Length: 223
Image 1 (cartoon, rainbow, N blue to C red):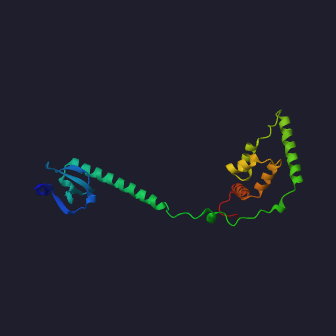
Image 2: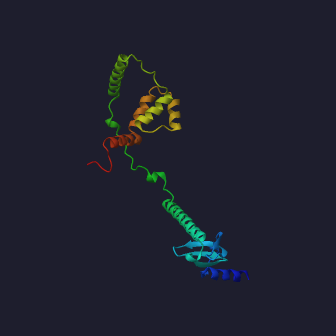
């Protein structure tokens, strides 16, 4: 009896049935009013410039907009705009999901910088040459400080030195294990030894290349 009454109201409103909808089409009910003042409750499916598709008891119907009240026509337009907005959001979410790869990454050694370049320690300058250059730099800086009436800072501690030297030579901070090994070492020449080790490391080559690439405005190749 209820279905018969609803179908009768549909005919009065000028509604045309277009088939049955599945359970997934169950929507919130709205009051739809005809231009003659008749009211039915049905869910919203979609809307065009000429008609609105509604759903009632699992069955969808097409209602001509010119047979509805101005309030119902405005509601159809508003619900259609909201539905399109949800559709765009869903499309964006699906696009983001497609951009996220679920393929597991290979092990780090597989994607690392290989093959590694063996350090050429034969090209290093002698310790005496390094000492002479360091003394010349110290004298130059000392003369500048004396001229400015300032004193040099005291030598840095091991914790400060190891951080600075890694940043200067390898372009990164040391790991906790590297800091511990350096600080706990009793070797009186450990600072020079660390500098020698870092200068022939992969980190030094990478850091120096980045510096030179930025200096030369490197993009894809040198021409």
